[in-house]
Length: 247
Image (tube, rainbow, N blue to C red):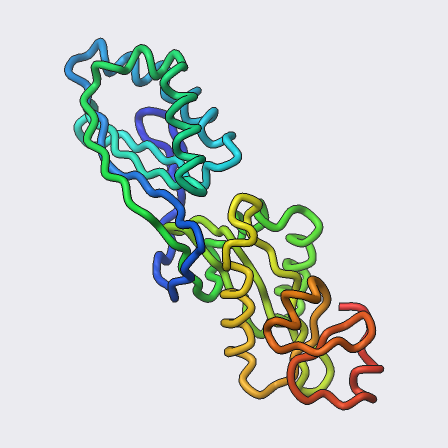
């Protein structure tokens, strides 16, 4: 939805889930920007679109939403950055920008806090933003699995509704399940989110065997055993394993 300022605002989604603590937390910022007069409001209307686009293009920016309130002099902000360094880089870029210089006199009331992702089951509102996280090939593959009814469970790690990680379990022959490749936002990799997603997927599988391809160190650390080019979690007979083709 677009407001009077012309900005696009994300569709409301499910902000719940199981916490996944990162070794280095993300940084979230919430608050408001208030214009003192019409001149400042016109400056905001003129310069904010470029500021939003430039902020969203920063590699460590995970969420950047600015919404004009019912009071046209007030904007509310919701921002998420990969870590404190990414937030500091954003502040430095903003300070040197036209927006940073021309908005110095606008009143700001911001609150900063650490943030960790939450993991929950995928919902329909996730599909479009997930496609951006997965990339075209994986997004097309997931779309095909959904269409064919082969998904047992799709898990999304999100930061205030924005997908930052994903894994799914799909049906194989018999009781076996296959783990789709783990996907984590590049700025959050190797901080514990991969392990949290994998742990929750295996919990959801219960006693059903799970077959996976990918990072052998990560998979073996979670209890998988190597079986040729594959890794297996649980009891899967050799003849059933031999019958598995490509995922």
